[in-house]
Length: 261
Image (tube, rainbow, N blue to C red):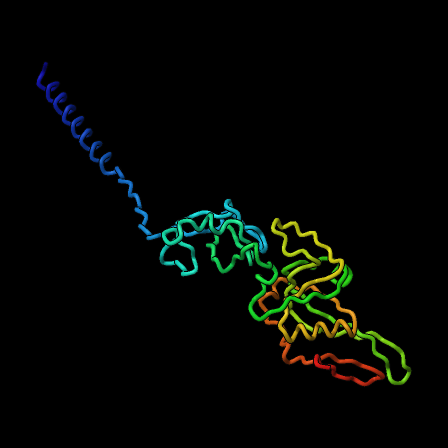
């Protein structure tokens, strides 16, 4: 082999080695290390929650309850903890819900009532009364008023003008934003099959003063219920203490009749 050929061969081998080294460096530089984020360890404790939705008046069966972990930072004293009451799931099974319970909502025993007690008296807030008024489909928004809806109570009476003695109907809103407890003898359907049509009565949640007023109003005229929007549910109810009676118009003269008369 001539010297010139040997030199070319050595240069070629050197170039190949340099190229291989550069390739290895480039490949090693592009290697990325995957970073796995470690989830923080949040302290939790098992509490009793609803495994499905339970309507007001619905039976809280065993399959409607389940133990689930709950962050201790968001723990409430009313929650039922497994560490304190391990048998609570079976103890509370069969009770009725005072209020609607959402899926995943922690169970509070104050929202449950035993079946050996009167249900309607159990769901009434302290100091309130359940009063039935005579109604029919026509006086309950065509039958679309259902338990747990909010309504206005309208009284219609017959008045006589002083000059001609002609009789005319006069209506006034007696109470506003009142909750309906039941239609006839049906409360909020546990299976959400709301197909109740009023035939005889609607049971309303009232204060003692409102109860006196509504009972007296039924003796003076006819009662109609006007359905309110669900957006009005959080509005305050009318002040029954400010309304101490009912206006009765006879022969053009207005008379205020109070509950004691």
